[in-house]
Length: 410
Image 1 (cartoon, rainbow, N blue to C red):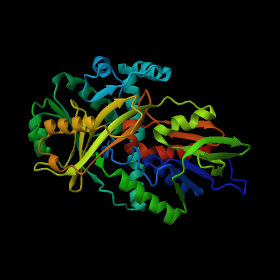
Image 2: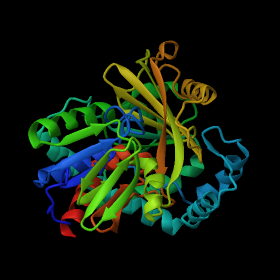
Image 3: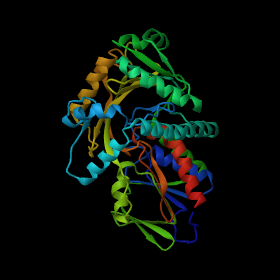
Image 4: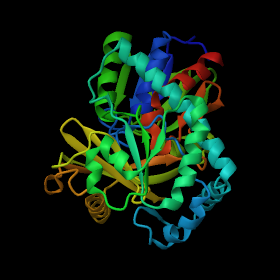
């Protein structure tokens, strides 16, 4: 790590991005005694991809996006026939490079390796979250809810069973159930039709990522002296001797010896002027939040056919899904919100009060072709902690620890 040797430095480390990954990284650094400044272009913490995502802490279910099944999905994705997973085809060479890299990962061997690599990080995250909550109890609707992955096609069950066996040596508890056994665990599944089998992960957790990030930032300010600067839209990073100068578009400059970039999909454009290129693709996802319905689930439920998740947060249900690849505008598309609501009604018609939806949301997931984040050095005093895809909330705490260790060991 570049030592803090200049009185002009604003902090020992600047963490760029105040979503769940950035706030978790700031916590890992602050615990090591470093002076931290968190910077974000939004007016507050966790207002981008962390704000209203699926809320599941999926420590056991870390399956990579690319696998042999992707080849069957590809025509529907490209033609727009797949309701849940769509692709905006582009002439941009970066789009094709990323797409080809994704297909290179769509083998059984790569699926296994990528899934287990992410699983290792997820289990580190679970341990780090438990340690955090022992030190600093936070209120964010956190609980061990368990999760049920529902399959409607029996041909998918052998692969699901094989993945359970691959994860078992890591201490992951999962079992494949028939419909009756799953309904006994979660009566809300009685509203689903045509269940072929269910993977039950009893130790999975849930929590509101926005409330977590806001609460942890309050702790960081009160107990660790962390400074947070919001509304700072950075244009580029510049290395001068032993310091980084972070230039904002309004002319302000933040000067620090060390930087950790946790800016999600915005990291790609931010890093490019410094010559750092990262293989990130925007995968736009949606959610809506509504009061619980007449038969709301207590456990988290994933509908694998429609690629939806149902997550109970107190007296509300968060439903998240859709994957619009190469969509770079986070503004919710009303037609896609309607698609999500319609699919949720089909899946579990009594899970939510669909007539009283409180809010809808869209966010850009920063996806790598191999579905695991990029946590590495990218220059003197520069560490990347980006590319968490659909699992940013799950992987945040472990990623923060890894990034802090990288910086400290440099």
